[in-house]
Amino acid sequence: MSKVTNIRLESGAVTYVPEREAIPPSKEIDGNVTVNNTGNPGSPAHYAISFNVGVYAENEGVKSISNVYWNDSIVAETRNAPYHEVEDESARRLPAMLREAADLIQKAMDDHDAEIE
Image 1 (tube, rainbow, N blue to C red):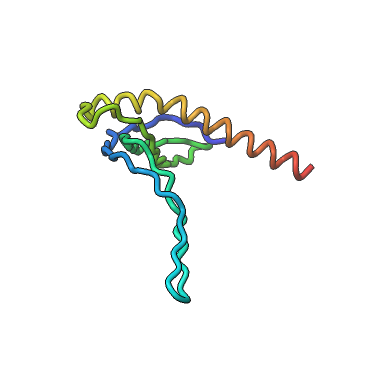
Image 2: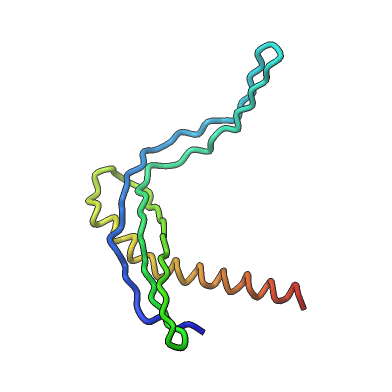
């Protein structure tokens, strides 16, 4: 099994995303043409944060590097928050989110194993 030997956490990219109002589904009929609009649930104003995490591993002398591109969002109380503070908050959430993802991967593998037995 490969052993993780190091990581590289690069600076996050932070983008402010303004609030998007919900749009209900609709149906328009014009003669023999019908247009169905699926609508949009909308979203609150938030910051979108992206990180690139390099993961270095080794397996019996064979080295590999994986890049994990991770996206997070933080609901914005104001659009004027210093981006370095938003990035820092998101970076500190990253270990817990990756652990949750690992747990879900393990569960998916366990479920798969149970199906084939």
